[in-house]
Length: 144
Image (cartoon, rainbow, N blue to C red; front, side):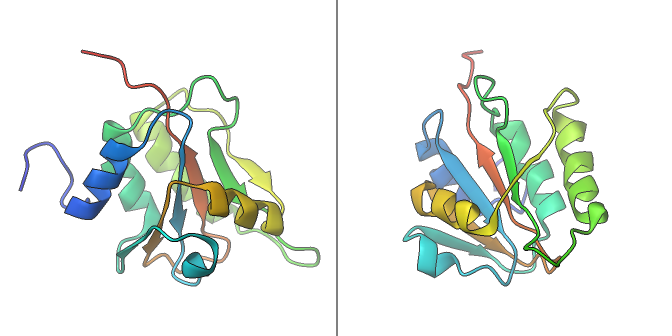
């Protein structure tokens, strides 16, 4: 165990976060997401819900301040609807760490999959909420 790091952060995830450069993206995927179809670097955190993961990761991870939309979720397919509670639960966690974080941008399903192909990694979680996937874009970490 390391001090100051959430026990939800596995050694593999900590390594991935440290390897990522600014401007790179990581996908926190729900349990139903076809991660292995769209990326070769897949980590599993079964049983971990995304709001909890956000609370664990964001103290270690700067959001990209040069991108107006460093937070991206999948939009509902035509004829379907989003559950606002899902986004709100994510924003509650995000705003706990970054009160001034920008709103979450929504993109079309297949555009989300294309972003996943280019993402640095995908973390499959135990999140079961429909449309529960979110992309985070890493920013520059200031030297303390």
